[in-house]
Length: 324
Image 1 (cartoon, one colour):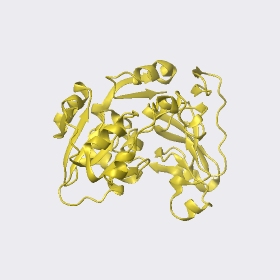
Image 2 (cartoon, helix red, strand yellow):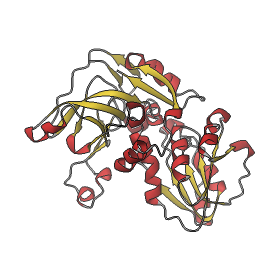
Image 3 (cartoon, one colour):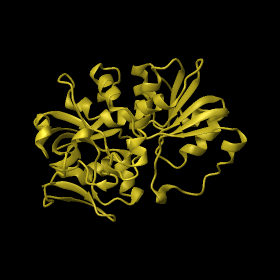
């Protein structure tokens, strides 16, 4: 079986990986499309200390299942949430299975990911893809759900000024999602060619170098994927404003310690934000509420996965999709 594997030190493509054997109540899935995420790149720099098959963004077909009760899933086209929970700990019992104390996370923590011919995921994590939603759009379900998570974590009052900081794949998704609110939204980044996409969505946009850091934004959503994002966000947000932090970076890229005193002095709320609601993301994609096709920069084969990871790390690239 072909797979893209990070062994804790280096990335390698192999054709000799054994096929996954599903545990109880798990499905084996054959991916049709896979998305390269900034998290995949950070893992290769040491984030999460992960070793194994990479990848967590996918749309695929269920090949087989463990347990006769789940046979209806065989042949279904699916996406899947990435946190695999125990269902027994205090977090799970309290309705926070994404924060299960014993969880594994697809391609990120303790579980092989989807950059392979086949991979396994619990059946309870699966969602069937609507017939009218094509693979190119469906593969964006996971990152779009992460963008919609911001809406679940914020209470919008009045007509706030919101800055989405970062013009990468997640930043551009968040900019579209936030623009659906009763708010004045802008996307701020460093790449004119990426920000130009905001024109077709009617989203205001500015280059970071042109923006005055005047501490006047009600909400700043940090999607930079950089250790420099939070210090900039703290200079943009007003006293008693809110920063939503979507950025995760490997320790080697964290740089010097960040001065967090502005959070105290200006009484700023800092909200961590991670995975989000898959049903809402699927519905938005099916209704064409969010443009994801414009974010596709390259389509490559899994066999070219090493090169795909290099391409995905280039400044002008937004999203690289892999096919089997």
